[in-house]
Amino acid sequence: MPRLPHRPSRWLWLLLALAALVLAGCSSTGAPWPGIAADSERAYVAFGQGVYAVHLTNGEEAWRFPVEKPARDQLFYAAPALTDSGLVIAGSYDHKVYALHADSGDLAWTFEGAQEQIIGAPVASGDVVFVPVADGTLIALSVLDGTELWSFHADGALWSDPVVSDDRIFIGTLTHKVYALSRQGDVLWTHDVGGAVAEAPSLVDGTLLVGALGRPLLALDPATGNERWTAPSDRWIWASAVSGDGTAYFGDLGGRLAAASVRDGSIVDETRLDGAITGRPALNSTHLFVATEVGTVRALRLTDFSSEWTQPVPSGKLYGPLLLQGDLLIVGVVSRETDVAAFDASSGQLRWSYKPASR
Image 1 (cartoon, helix red, strand yellow):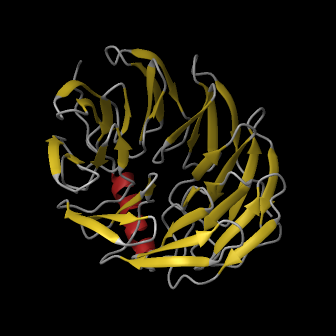
Image 2 (image 1 turned 120 degrees about the vertical axis):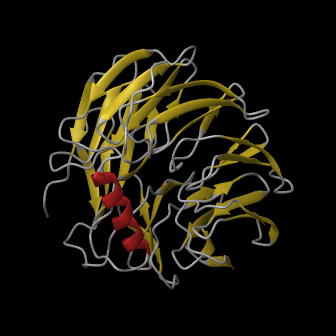
């Protein structure tokens, strides 16, 4: 495939610098990009000073939280967690965790025990939700009522969301560490990956894949933390990898998209796109969907990375992950005109876009 020269735009570096300031508690601006989760009926968007539910069929707003104008420090920075019991759980810059009823947006409970801002995404598993806090604390809460079950303190800031398996929790820090914890919060192992972990690792086919700034894609044994292999990257890896049929797909800030064997890390295909890849791609059985910073969404055939369709997002920048829900491809947009865009995954046609009206 052709390799096009590309350097990340100055706006990307400014945005990453802004995100670093936010993490350090030096900014009171809104979130760098929308965090999105979805079920079969609605997309839930945590962004700026609110959480919004949007109907998947037409992009119309179903509800918002809070209804009235929020406090200045009530800011949301990551995708909410969805629970089997019908809750939407979002962490905020105001040190609080809010659990909302998915069908109405009504408040179910609030947790106020975090000591610093919550920027990473919470993750729900069964009757527990795991919340990363900027001071390095991972808090386990009861989904039922928000009661704290336990907490763990890492040696550095937690920006990424945790990865939860049946018996383990994996979390990366900005101080280069990956931790494996038991479901009770006990440390099982740690591994220094040599770079800041800004996005969640990926647990695929019995292998933990970690992207770190300034490092190649790293594969760890989830049982021991031992390194299995590395796959080279041209620039920093910001986005999480996705995988299917024994292949891991990952992008970097230079716009390189690569496919690597999960077994040994060997590169089986690669291409160069038109901008930095900072958001996790999405995957189905036939296509890989990827967005670039310059505002382009693509569907690429898994067989050879050839293009099925390409769709620009007018006047928008794309930094967050792509979310595939049925036949709908959803992406958060940094733009004055829209916060969320939804495309037909088969054709690339824009189905709807959404931006909340002012309170």
